[in-house]
Every structure is written in C-alpha cells, then in structure tokens.
Length: 378
Image (cartoon, rainbow, N blue to C red; front, side, top):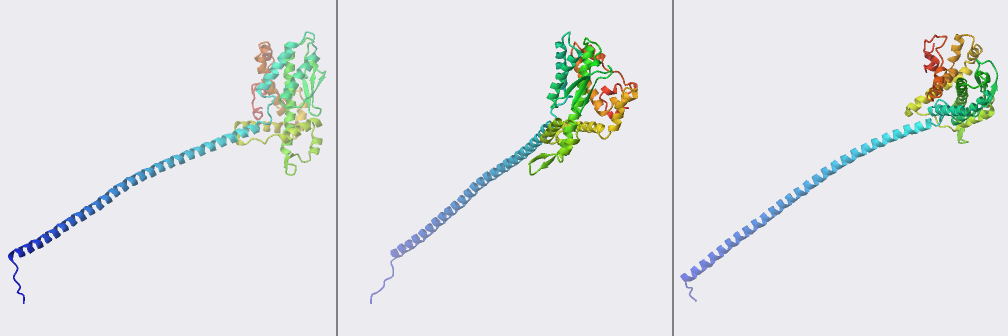
C-alpha cells in the first residue's frame, strides 16, 4: 500500500489562495454584473424618461395643433355665418329691387311724371315762340294738339282725335272716351290776336283734357289686367269672355285692343318688399278705382253734377271735386309751376292761378290746387 502523506503547508496556502482568488473573482464578477445590471436598468429608465419627455413634447404639439384647428374652425364657422347672412341680405335686397323693377313696368311714365310735365311745358313754349303774327286760333289749337300727341306717346296712350268746336267762351274743352276724341272750344281764346293769357289757358286746357284721356286709358288697362287668368294650355294670360268685354267697353275697338295687349303682357303687381314703389302703385290703383266708379257705379251722381255745372258755386264745387276732375285740376298746377320757371310766362302763370272756391269761401285754401285728399274737402 501507498502511504498518503499529509499536504504540505505550502500547498495548502496555495489552495487557499486559489479559493480566495476564486471567491474574490466571483465577488468581483458579481459586483461587475450588478453594476452592469444597474447601468442597463438606468439606461432603460433614462430611455423611458426620454421617451416620456418626447411624448410629452409631441402631445403638447398635438394639443396646440388641435387648439389652433379649433380656433380656425370657429373662425371659419363665424366667417361662413357672416357670409350666409350677407348672402341672405343680398338676396333680400335683390328681391326688393326685382319687385321694384317689376312694379315699374306699368305704367312706365304718366302725365304726372315730372320729366313729362317739363317736356310739355318746353314743347308748348317752343310752339309759342314759333307762332307767326298771322297764326289763327285754329292753327294754335292744332299745333298744341300735336304737342299733346307727343306727350301721350311718351306715356303709351293711344293717339286721340282732335276736334274744334265753337261755343260760349266759358266752355273750354271736353274728352269723349267713346270716340277717343278731344274737343276744344276755339272761342275760349277771345282775341283774334293770340295773347299770352289765351295761349296759356289753352295750354292748361289741353293738358287737363289730355289727363282725362290718360285716366280712361289707365282704367281700361287695369280693368282688363284684373280679369286676366293664366291659360295652362296656351301658356299665356287670357281674358275670359274677351269679346263681351270689348263689346261693353266704351272705347273704340282699336283702343281696347291696345289696352288688352298691355294688360296681358305687363308684369305682376309689386310686392310689399318694393317699399315706396308698392305704396305709390297702390295709391294709383286706388285713384283708378275711384275714376272708374265715378262713371260706372256713381254715374247718375256724376252726370247730375255735369248737367248743373255753372248753375251755382255749389255745383261748381261739386264738379271740381269729382275724382276725375279733381285729379285733372291738380295736374294743371304742375304745368303752372313749370311755366313760372319761364321768364317770358312767369307773370302770366301767376295771374291765371284760380282763387279760393266760391262755395266753401276759401275754407280749404284753394282746395282744388292744394293736393288735399278728397275725403278732407268739404
């Protein structure tokens, strides 16, 4: 048997050193590993913190963008609302303008229109300046009749027939719708040499009777307009029983036909949105209605007034305040105001202005020429 010898002291020391070294190494490795783990953990934590910080920045940017977008959207909404309101206002204004334009279709102009009265005064004065020393009273009537024809043409009124008659100087003229004829008394000009006063009185008389012509024209057009109906089959307006209407109308056939054409082709009545245009139109229609009633519904009273004209101040008052006469007398004032602007006729126009009503003794201060509504005239 081999004998086992006890380890030598040096070997033991070496072994212990080796064990110690291994332990130290293990401890060192463990420490290194722990440090590495910590560094790795710290790196993960830092990365997470960096990511969180980055996410926070991104979120803040997103929040700002969202807020900016919301502000922009609100501004866009407000702008859209304002644009819509502006568009609505523009549409309403356009509708009002359109209504006004349609309302102005009929009548386009009338003898009461300022520029028409001005044209008449100018043309009449030009006629006066062209008169020769040998011009007869008949010549003057014919020449002023042509001036009136031009005015009627401006207003779309069918041409009338002019006739001269001879009667007492107190009679001036008449208009007969049955014949579409105006009759002027040659003897209303009392002097063989035409004076300014005679000429001016003739100017007023012609415009007065010319207004009666326009009244009859407006009445007939409006009457046919109110009767018209839309024909779906013909796709146009028609007047039912038009032949009966033509037969019963007092005007000549050619005048009725022209009125019918205007009534069927004119625009609709204006809307309330047209404002003043609507108010003016309705005021005219009210006048037209009264003119019509005075020779239809109230024909007996009207005829009685004409039959008694000149018998007393009372009947003169009644005559001057008949709807058609009241309107025609008022239009004379418009002519007078234009002639007052002509130096050559200013004094004459002032001198022929009528005085207060002999029946009401001036109570209404020349009610015929003051524009006072008829219901206020006593």
